[in-house]
Length: 209
Image (cartoon, rainbow, N blue to C red):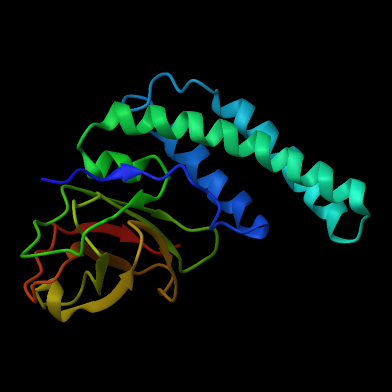
């Protein structure tokens, strides 16, 4: 069986996108200390290098040759740290694709999802930044191509999440909007694969703020 690996080649990531990607890695390594207990480059160091890159990128947009060179040098420094922690994360997770995805890095040669996928082990729902929003964190399911989040007012008598309001997300963490403040909702999640059969998690309940 072929093992997926964390990608440590960042050439395809544009300057304007590198900051967002790096923040994803910072979050992934910080939020999962049990899986990634000792990155060789501390997350705080990567944060400082990212901020330096961001500052120099702004100057380079309307700057001179020296500003562009400084931005390029800052990018090399940041990429070197990301590669170091990427190698570490790849080794620390072995063949566990779900844990690799938690790192915030992209994977090489990720296969197309096949077959029926299990229901997510858990789902965490919290209030979003604005009224009528839910932040949803779905447990990563190996080989999932995306996730479904099903919502229904708790007053609804429909028991099957497949018949509730369905939202799709490519990532296992997403913010969903448009809920009525003060209404309690049931929320369930399912992983999407090649199979037409989806298995929803046990629903959780939360009142929209």
